[in-house]
Amino acid sequence: MIDLKAGGDQPISPARRTDRSTPRAVRMAMPLARDVVEEIAKQYGVCIRPVPMRRQDILTGQVEVIDVPCGATLESKCPPCAMRNRQLRQAQCREGWHLDHEPVNLPDTPDEYQRHLVELRADAQAWRDEVEKAGGDTTDLDAAIAELDEEINAAGMRGNVLGRVSGKRTRSTKRRQDAPDLPKRRVVKTTLGRTFTGSNGKTYRPSMFVTLTLPSYGRVLEGVPVDPDAYDYARAARDALHFSKLVDRFVQNLRRVAGFDVQYFATVEPQKRLAPRLHMAIRGTLPRAELRQIIAATYHQVWWPPTDTVRFEGDHLPVWEDGTGYLDPDHGGGPAHLGPSPRPA
Ligand SMILES: [Zn+2]
Image 1: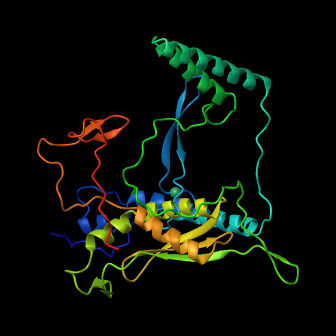
Image 2 (image 1 turned 120 degrees about the vertical axis):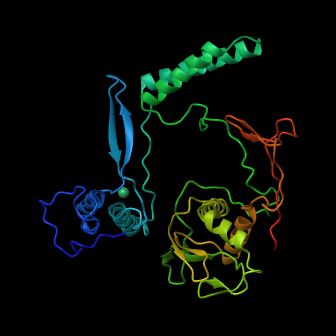
Image 3 (image 1 turned 180 degrees about the vertical axis):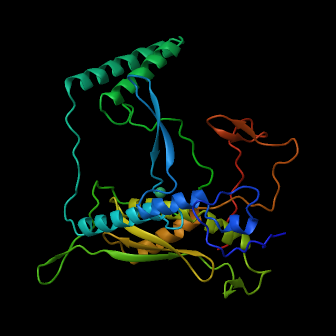
């Protein structure tokens, strides 16, 4: 029951204290301290949901917690970060879109100490491999190598001498193996698209605008499926949930086919028929036919196992293994492959 005796419309003086005797309606009219903090943060353009991160000084061992801006691009998540991101994108677009050269930073040439470390690392690797071949224990050598890798990074070198990303590479099972082959060009390390020379001798470097929409799951009228029984709800929900993955895969495929590091600006917009839609401004061009092939192949590649057949239940469940994921209990350690479900064409 709401106690309205004191009236909810009374102005609240800053001196008013909230205790049990304050009527509920009056208390409810007071702003939440947390909301006030957010309002002030917005006003000063400061992130409203910073991410706390621990930073340890490797010399003194001192640990401090620093707040890093969340970096959201959606205004509904964090207006100040979204605004900053928008301004950054605008500046990037204004300064970069028409560049006819690469704004690359060439890495510095390695100094003597860096070279020494890498040589040491090579020797350690050779030694380790010999011990392994002879059937010996490589634990100590592996530890020494790990330390050397850290030292290499600390000396201002990026990445790993073996040239691979740390951790075991496992193939995702969320990928159809029968994806149609896309044309592939040799990838050139450039972000610049093709140029064309006009009849007047002028050189053009065209760009293009692409809109990606998801297929129909059934007719929708005023935000509601016309025929609920025929509407493919499961597919609509999954496509919407995994939309960002579709976009990632599309860009991957686009770069592979285009043969260069395609740059773009994009935005996602909801459609009336409940599906998200992507608008992309792409630097450089590709034939429309190739683009259509990429779109078809991308959508074909992202698939999900069927949810209407139960594969594991009761005691018959996939077994978890750290670093690998779930393993199929029947196939003696193979990944718990759920089997592709061909999409209806
Ligand atoms: Zn933020």
